[in-house]
Amino acid sequence: MITSPVVVQKLTEYTLEDWIENPPEKKEWVDGKLLEKNGMSLKHSRIQAKLATYWRNYLNSGQQQGEVYTDVPCRTNKQGRYPDVAYLTPELETEFGNEKVLPQSFPLSAEIVSPTDLAEDIIAKAQEYLESGGEEVWLVFPENKWVIVVTQESRLIFISGQVVNTQKLLDGFSIPVDELLS
Image (tube, rainbow, N blue to C red):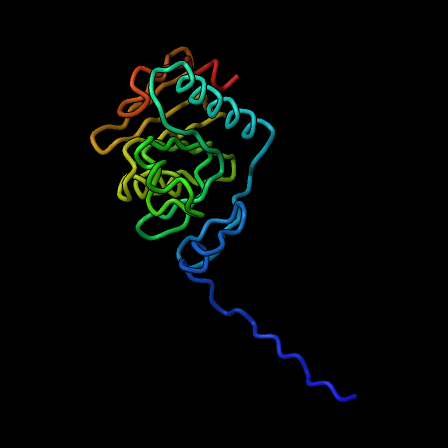
């Protein structure tokens, strides 16, 4: 029996459209390349889980509605991203809740900064979220015990001993920085 040889076509390019169709877990599409989210540690995961729980508990208390996610894909104007924690309003949940990838930034996102992250990259990511439909971004720096809350209008730094609060979404939510980062 003669069989034909199997031709394997090597994927030379992975486009943003490829990423949107089938987003690889914890791999962002940045500047035409797949980048694995790395540098996650037990501390990073603990803070991520705590922040998601605090936001979810706030919603469950009846203060507001919507949904909280962790490590969920979204498309910005130019990249494919996975925010560490994200909040989706009820309106956007109704419109996009069954999509593989949110076709815009989440209204409220948080990035837990790892020791391997570069400050310029994290700040650029926050700006990217804001330019793609996001309204508020939390940049959480566990090692420095800082939380920077970024909106189009302001950049606020909350440090150890202070209470961080949302500026545009989850109206009235606040938490002591030390409690979040402990």
